[in-house]
Length: 275
Image 1 (cartoon, rainbow, N blue to C red):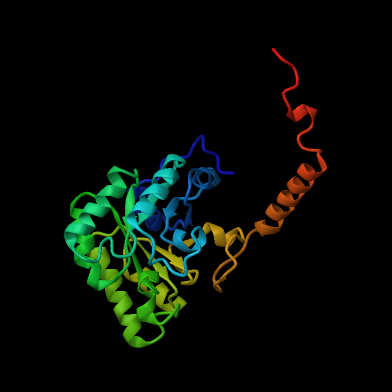
Image 2 (image 1 turned 45 degrees about the vertical axis):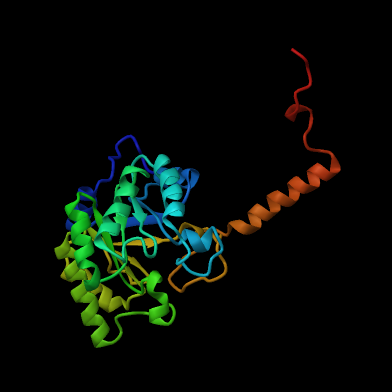
């Protein structure tokens, strides 16, 4: 466990400075108070409340059904449990694409209502103007390029990006455009490792990889994936650190057996004397 007695609150400035110092950045997703508090104690640099919540908690097949209302509720809960990590809210599908006005208003809700400290949105060069306007309003923005889940239908599935020269060039130019627009960092998702390394070297802001190789400035994974709590699809890049479902099932089975046998609750777990 990280020694919180000397730990400082992670800010956008400290987040960016980690790249300058060559320090790797650890990011995990969380969607509720308890998990955010646990990950915060564990020492993560940032907690991302991702729109992956639609798949791992609601059983959706993609992130598309996730709404602003859903995200605001989860961000509020996670922010309450976070003391040190940088809290980043994922902007859901169609909450920022239709217009600059909508993008600014919804980004503002995450900061003002849900107590996030930054927002994340998907897209490359085509989203630079949106990033710039949100940043101009005083809201830190994390970019997201590569295989962007909200555009999965356009990609025809979860396909690795940056393999062909045209894709590689687009990604590098997108990363530079996002940096120029004021983004403080960016997620690189499902990008060929050598292309991700080239992008990381081409920008001065941190790159956070997910399926993009070891040369990114940091890494992010979905908490449910590393705990074994989402088994519908396990990407190649996921490292499972524990397999919780069998342990949860074992505990539940023991509870059921104890209730049915009458051994729960026992005397120590009951209030027997009148006061």
